[in-house]
Length: 397
Image 1 (spheres, rainbow, N blue to C red):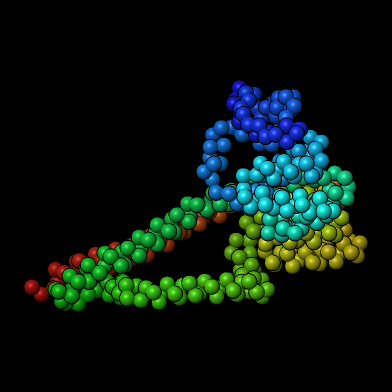
Image 2: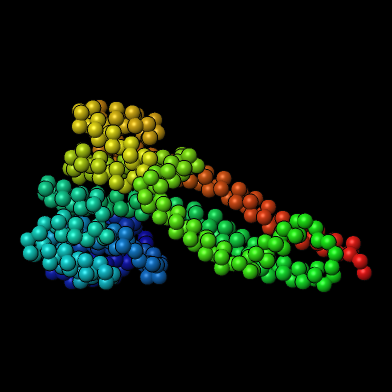
């Protein structure tokens, strides 16, 4: 038996918190529902403590909002009452203001999707379109549940990518700092010694000392150049041409990882939209917007034209030649059997698992390359210092 902390609300909107003992999370939820409250959040106490010290983000706020609103609507509460409860219990001031604004718009006669669309920084277009489809079909609670699953899977994918990149990032930072300390603090001390002793200095040492002097004397120029170059690069990649060329370069550099990532994103988004009742052409256009690589995204335009011409989705996707063969085969089977939405979700799950392996393989290859590269730089500096030390014996007394 495990202890679960919970946050719930009663039918009249009173928020209650406490702890419950159950075999697993599902059993805990059932026990809570049997007591007459509506569960909003369920977690083990340790996770709750960690969450208090975690940084909040708009994505996290949207996920929490979707989870809690889905629970309230699923319990039979009307939308305006559910939003009123959420505005009172929201821990984020920004989210509280947004929910209050949405509630005000609804009470003035706007639909829920139109109210959400007035906050594009918080709710992306795909979120609004899915809610609009749920409103039209009278299944808003079901759509919110699917949205919750979609946001959860997207969050897990982002967290996995972030976690595997922590070690390479730390490695680059520590190695870079070590090189800077060697060039700006250690080497200048040797430079003073050699100037006092006189004599010729080995070429490798001269190169390293020149780098050290340049870094000490013109660090502001170097720093300004790096910052300026970064700003120019960012401005260039914001343009359509620059972004396309940069994405094409990334596709050549790590095509396997990017293709699997975009396949998983595209298929999960499209499958979720189709399950929510969004028409295929609109769902495809929305799914294209979640693809970050412009080379792959531009290929989806031809798929839209193929659907308009009655060719379906499998053949135009195959002609686009941007997704892996296995994914295309599964999509074709799903289209032929009339289960395209379910098959797309299976494709997404397959490539999310495959992506984890591909990322681990890529990082596993990246780490030794970075270690060897940084080791060669530091090794050259140390070698130059040793050559200078050994040459001291050759200097005239």
